[in-house]
Image (cartoon, helix red, strand yellow):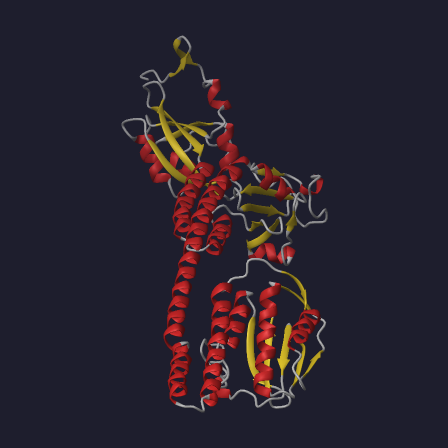
Length: 499
């Protein structure tokens, strides 16, 4: 103004300022400064209390100070440019607070009623900027989750995103196991393991995690020790954020301090949880598809093997029987030829039995039950009753297995021992660490054949069909076990099964 008088807006238009600024200036929650550009250099006319608290200046001593001394921040040029511009300007700046924390601000200039004075307003947008950055990072995480090929990969990405993007250093993803009706830890951060060691599983209805999982609602628990559903009252955690993942489980973030999590944490966490749930859904479909493709490939392999058996292994004894029948028709002393025909037919019968067992059983186990090995082995031996052979059972082990297939496994191993060790064989079944062994006192299996004995059609003796041990190997694999062969103490074969 030409007379040096300051004018401010009021409800009635303009009124003369007699030294007191508009009272709204003082009560603004955001830092504000009034700058005069009508002097030789920009001068500070006033700062409000919010400015003084945020940046550590005295409201009286800064009056008439040069503007540059007040700004004193890496973004002072941007602020000066916004203040001195021809129109109301806006810019984003960083400025250190009196506590030494660097914050993000949206700086706006408002001209004071046509005079040379302008207001500068700082609006703290640190949280908003961080929120936007987190949303951008979560968008990138969503792409990673949807590109994951397995559910294990999904939960690993989810746990890492909760830690690195949302700042939940203590977090874990629990997957729901329908068979056991429990929430089981699937992935967790290093900090969580430091505090808890091996995370526990949560049985049905036994925890805050179960409450979130069953209701489908995100939960902020300010003090878990005061929650009636707390799983472990002496837990090192004080507060938790629990984010359900649909039918797949729950993401749990924890803190050793009470009341750590805010509504913004919940909203961002729900975005991540929704992305994890979508990733698990897609990965589960992909895993199911791969399993079906693998099953189809195995089925095709079995069909090819079956065709090979029919075309070769069964045709050979059939051709042999036919040849001997022709000789028998020409020979009045035909008994020897007929004996050979009968032997060929027996071999075909054994082959057909083994092929049917192999074809019908497949390579998967649908369900298991506890099976006592001593009782099962005794039943196997009672059905055989080989003259002169002895079975010694020292194991007392009970294993979860498909009973009929486990019976087939030991039937075949005992048959193999009697076939190769002879009618006076001694067969021992005893414990090893994590499994059992079946050993005989026969000639044993040469080291160069041990890797091939579980292949279909690999016969160790002329009277063997080559299927018995192959079926053993398949039953072991179907249960998720392992089997190996070595030399027994008496020089025979020793099969070791690890459950």
